[in-house]
Image (cartoon, rainbow, N blue to C red; front, side, top):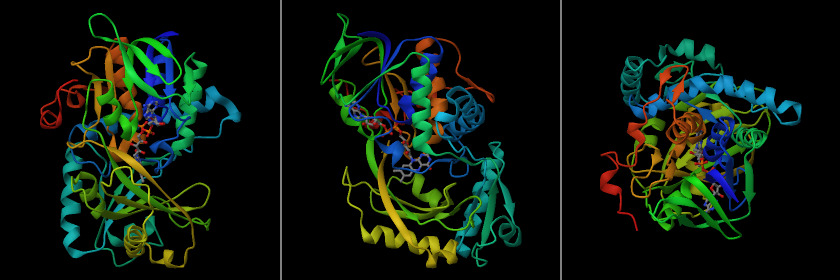
Length: 399
Ligand SMILES: Cc1cc2nc3c(=O)[nH]c(=O)nc-3n(C[C@H](O)[C@H](O)[C@H](O)COP(=O)(O)OP(=O)(O)OC[C@H]3O[C@@H](n4cnc5c(N)ncnc54)[C@H](O)[C@@H]3O)c2cc1C
């Protein structure tokens, strides 16, 4: 088997890259040791946010992605027809609130910095916040409305992107693990060896989510991608009482922090099915999958401060996943100069669902030629390059 591009990982990032490359006429193989959306992309939430991102390259990439998602959701629906469930794209907007006096000022200042970076961030009064979310705690101390925040169903979105990639000729190789890199006489990437076969390819993309760090090391191009645990509580179905993505101001501190210890913040949203998702936690505990009561207790306590009515809700289930964390909080996207032909597309931490589509645009242009674009204009690849200065202290030399 020989293709133009071998994509390792059938999560949302690999799926988006595969679709984008295949739709431009490249032959693509998607390889996963499990199946479609078996990793973090089915153990997360589906928020496409600008509200939680400080001005800088990640926010820029998020804005490009948000500009791409609406048309993509429509294209997927048109292309795949009624047999594929809808990706549930909802431009519902976000509402960030604080519940302490001390938290109010930093939230308002943060919103100002985001407005300077062209984000639509509207400081609203408590009365206006209650008009947006009538079941909100009236004791909140500040609120900012982010009309641009959206939501999708991440597992379905991943499967839809894969189905679309297949329609454009991509082939999937499931239940086979990539174990090593094939190299040509110059040492350039020339494909992958899996537990079943060799797949020859002109370019190889590592899109293995939180496992990318281990895998990239095995392929001779180590990158510092580590798992960062996150958990979510799911209520049983109830009448629709939460209309935006709503979270407390603590959340911003948690996403940007490098602290390995447990951090939680209330992140609350309802799904189209009528359940309410209560997230979320962040901690670096390796690939430990245990679901701990102390973590849930802290998340639930914070969620009740935002929506007191949830105290009567019944919890139907809970789940956890592993965010692909990088120490400088930026994804790694692009060719690895240590192993020409090997490309990285991972490390999106808590934003990979949103950022997947702009990542795919970047990689498609880097591999297939052309300029990466969204409706907002050109996408700058340089902040995400392997050889960026903020990553240098964490980068080991190639094996
Ligand atoms: C609790 C929680 C909430 C989150 N909420 C959001 C959110 O609201 N919005 C958002 O944008 N992001 C969110 N995220 C982050 C998001 O889920 C991730 O950034 C994203 O899913 C990463 O996608 P991926 O394709 O890189 O990785 P994955 O989805 O993990 O896919 C990687 C794939 O690689 C495969 N693989 C690994 N090693 C090999 C190998 N050697 N050979 C073959 N295959 C291999 C795995 O089987 C897996 O299928 C959340 C994460 C968590 C944990």
